[in-house]
Amino acid sequence: MKMVPLGWLTIVLLAATPVIAAEQPPRDEQRLEPRRAMPHPPKSPLRFVQVKGNERQSLEVTYIDPRTIAFRITKSGACNRHEQGRATVAKNWWLGAETDENEAGEAIAVQEYVYRKSGTCSINLRIDEGDYTQATIREASECSPECGVSEEAMYLQKRQSHLIPWSISLR
Image (tube, rainbow, N blue to C red; front, side, top):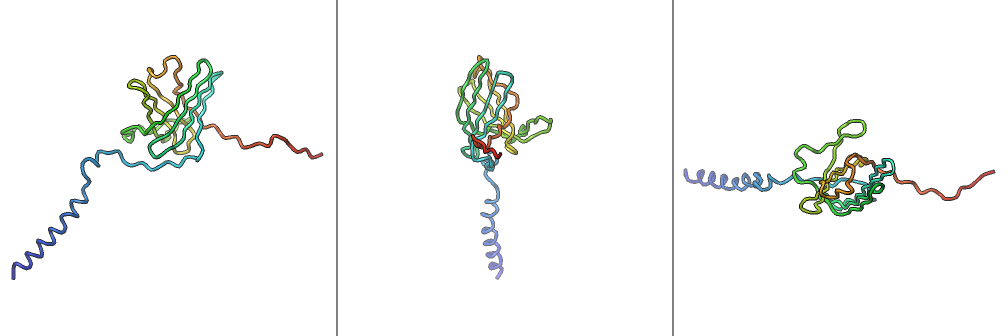
């Protein structure tokens, strides 16, 4: 008679064991970067611009997936430069360096993407993914020593509405 309750107790404990083991994530999953939700940028490419005197710098960004962007950097003025490629989210970016300052000196959330052109050349693109109004570019000095990009903030270029090339005059 005493064996029946002991048998039921054994069955209950063995049945609960896989559930307890399933609740603990493997150590490899704990080390991975948390999953990032896809940002919701405008459907058309974003274009950030900076103009200082006769120098003009622009960054055009198109979102490919939650971790990848296609970009194009253009600089003209004292020197000319055209750079394009695909950049991915910086590893371990979630560890606390995900803010920049806007014109008002307020902290804004940014996402950093990295493009590795060579072993010594990497370009970091930081984009305000809250309002999509600001971006900055930081690059290693080995990337283009003769025509480096400005690290100052660039701002979203407002798209011009399609204006009618002719006007109607009512007289």
